[in-house]
Amino acid sequence: MRIISLKPDVFGAIASSLCYLHCLLTPIIFLSTSANLNLNSSTPIWWNELDFIFISISFFAIYTSTKTTSKRFMKYFLWFGWLLLFSLIINEKISLFSLPGYLKDISAIGLAVLHIYNLNYCQCKNQNCCA
Image 1 (cartoon, helix red, strand yellow):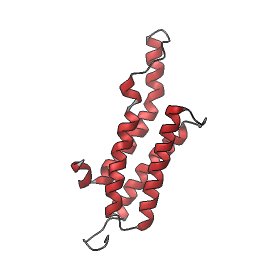
Image 2 (cartoon, helix red, strand yellow):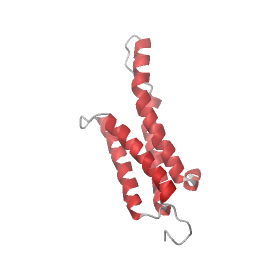
Image 3 (cartoon, helix red, strand yellow):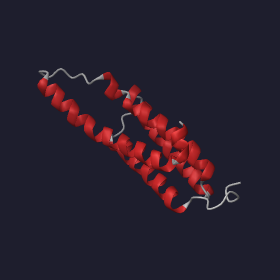
C-alpha cells in the first residue's frame, strides 16, 4: 500500500482501466472457454474475484488522492465514483437488480477519468494548499 500513496491517481487510473479491460474480456473468455469445454459454462474463480482486487486498489488510491487534492468537489466525485462502481460490482455478484453490464464499464471508465483529471488539474503545489 505504500507504493499507492506515492502516486495514488496513477494507480487509481490503472486499477480502473484494468477493471474496465477485465469487464471487456470476461465475455470473450467466457465464450471461448465454453466453446472449448463443450459448453461447460464455468469461469475460473480467480478471474471472477479480480473485481474485488481492482476495487480494493481503487479504494486505497482514492483514500490517498482525496488527502492531496486541491479541489473539494473532486473528493466527492472520486468517492461517488468508487461507491457507484462498488455497488454495481456487488449487485452483479448477488444479482439483486437486473442492470445492464455496460453501467459497470461506464463507471470504471469514469473513475479512471476522474483520477487522470485529479492528477493533472487538482494537485497541491505546496504543503499548505490541502490543509
